[in-house]
Image (tube, rainbow, N blue to C red):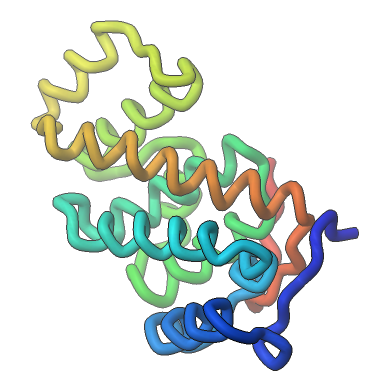
Length: 180
């Protein structure tokens, strides 16, 4: 059962209706998650702003999808696992094996693997990491810009993971993926 009200697109007014229009233009639909965020235009704007900014960063979309999968698995978010599995397959064109690896904070690509392992260390350490974790990432070529964006992606993904767990947001994607 949801903990806060859902603001459906047909009943949205004012700023929320305008934001829904922007979301629909950008992603084609107003996802269920956004319909719960619609209770606060500030939350919708925060999600849109951070995701939009990171879309223009140095981490490619396929790496950001892997980060989202890893975070959703770690935070046990069925909604986000389902959404990002769909996006990983259909937008980023990741294969099943790479999606499975990402859920475990790993990749067959050494550079991406280092990014995921560092992200996992940061998340598990709640921001604190061992020097060795950073050294390993740097040996694999992870840059300061990538590290900054890893941290920002953790923040974005934690926002959506917690938001959807709190609301038990209904999954609208073709496949419901549950955490292990």
